[in-house]
Image (cartoon, rainbow, N blue to C red; front, side):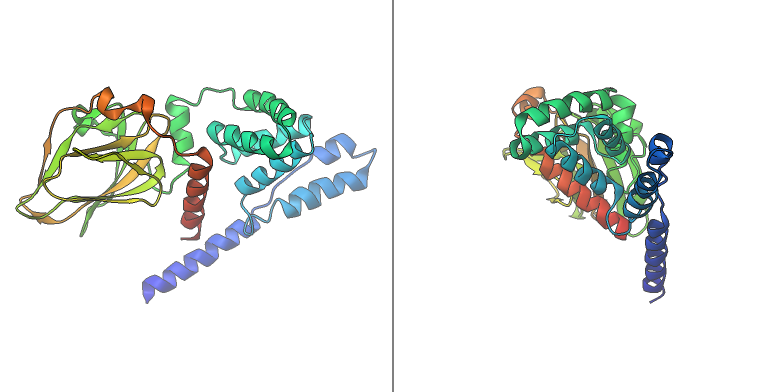
Length: 294
């Protein structure tokens, strides 16, 4: 009962803070304050000060998506589109997502409009989104921390992975993050009784494969049950960061047997079927919204 009350109070406080978030805009007054003061007031105080600030009803990321879709569809590709593309980037839309968004718009609004929009988007997302930049962007896609470099188990991974302990009481839970193409070696969970592991996709896109079976794609919300004695591996897709929660199932005499690395041929990154970026975008957006509510 106390936990429920605390959760309710926390949710109310969170929503109140979100409702009070106010977007400050001065472009109207700076550019048209003397020539068209009323228009400047409506632009700065109403459009941005009120409409854009209703983040308790619709988040900034989604408002950016709606706005750039509207501007591109109308063929408006001046500085206003550049401003809103930059805002979209600041509000969490990634380079992969904006590429897919504009491609999608092109089929409905017209191919030439998409071409022009891409020229502006390339300038806004010109920075390389690899390494630490991509890692920082990925952190915004999930509520759990990426954690520290997984140095203790680095010898059993190809590529860089990160580990963040989530719980060490009742059930051991860790958030494991993989950079693109990173995967762990083939391994087997052992126990004389009970044991095994459960994975839940948190963000990005990854793979799980048992020996002798096709690889299974892991998207946010997917649950993978790994029995004791099954040889398997898991890791990120070739074109995506990936994170999953790892639940250690309680058992007796539990251990892991680490085996040989997963070769490039076994991983098959050049032939991996790719989940549509819009699917990943929608799933990650739903996950973020659920995290905001909870």
